Length: 146
Image (cartoon, rainbow, N blue to C red; front, side, top):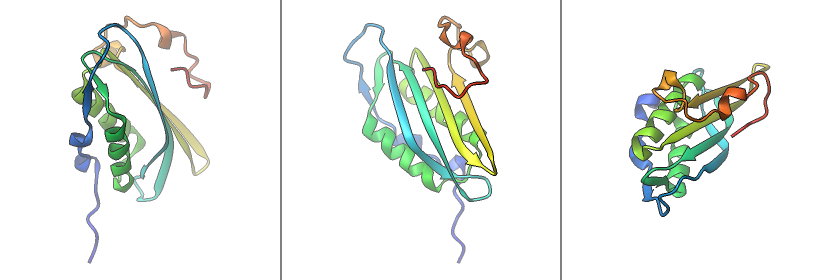
């Protein structure tokens, strides 16, 4: 018997839970996920550090549910590029933040490392570009500016 291969379509966003934002003023939440694991497209384990910068509106991330969501990704076969986009879409849909920025720094595979970034503030993502911190970021460095 062969085991069913789980793909990005099997990622369950209903695992993510929201808590009411206790403060209605502007503030920033930073989250680091140092053990982000999933199966790469060749069904081999991939590892990454993920950094989330989150500007809440009415909801904040329940960290336990985020942990369960991330744990569920361990059996998903997906490319880096698809995964960061699905992860971004799910966080946007569930939490509806004013801004979210996700940086995924993938461990080397075959001698090559990757760094992927998505920011809801970018015009290309429908943002207003009202935050300018990302504009001065040096793309050729591995420093994580959140």
